[in-house]
Length: 316
Image 1 (cartoon, one colour):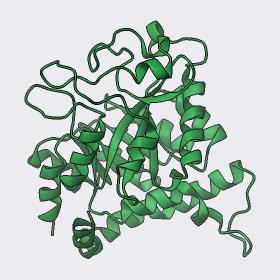
Image 2 (image 1 turned 60 degrees about the horizontal axis):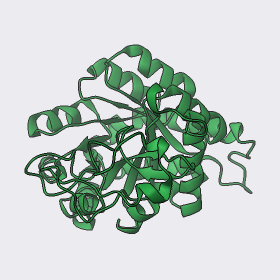
Image 3 (image 1 turned 180 degrees about the horizontal axis):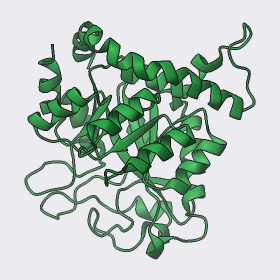
Image 4 (image 1 turned 45 degrees about the vertical axis):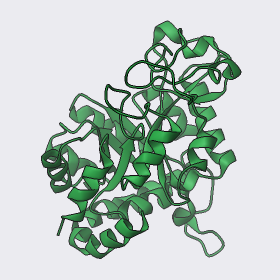
């Protein structure tokens, strides 16, 4: 990763003007978070906005201009012909080996309030177990085995965030998507507020908040993050390209939006000019990767980080 990082640092000046638009407003967002926490901002005895974890994450992404390369669930969904189960430690390690600057993983709550790395509300598709994750105790979920692309059990188990960070380089970014359960799987103690608090608490306990991006489709999750953990990097995920999503994220003072790659150029500009970063998903072909770079995306989430690294290496 250090080799690709050095190459992109040399190219950073070509994107300085575009990044500057967002940087003008980024300071205001950091100060707002600082004030929300009741902390001092900008004084000689306080590092102010620059000391906030969100500022560290923003700076790490900007340093990877033209765009950070984040492996989606490692190297993508569990699928036929692919050697790694999604959200597995092997897939996460493969993403880094393929040139990614970090990974995106999904977390949910077990019945006893523990975080587990898992995408679906149910265990059926990706493991040899069945039922809602929220109906299983943490220790029992850890006895499940992740399935390979042929639907056969592997030796791998659903990992924890601690294990994810342990297999990554110390400077790798991690996008933790907070997966709020749908109505069929919500149980007492596993709702959006519980999930947001558990995610923030665990990342703080691990001491990795300065390289963690939180994202969620759930506005309920993000309201809790905004009101209780305003110093952490939080982003609104959305798949339908609506201006209202961007405006809501700006109004909440979030750090970023995480739109599907179909987002219009005008909405990208609106977000960047308001100080938000724009981290798009899931972009898997070279032409679309280049299009997202040209639009001004600050990070690209992909199933094929090796291909994205090749595209980024060719940017002048």
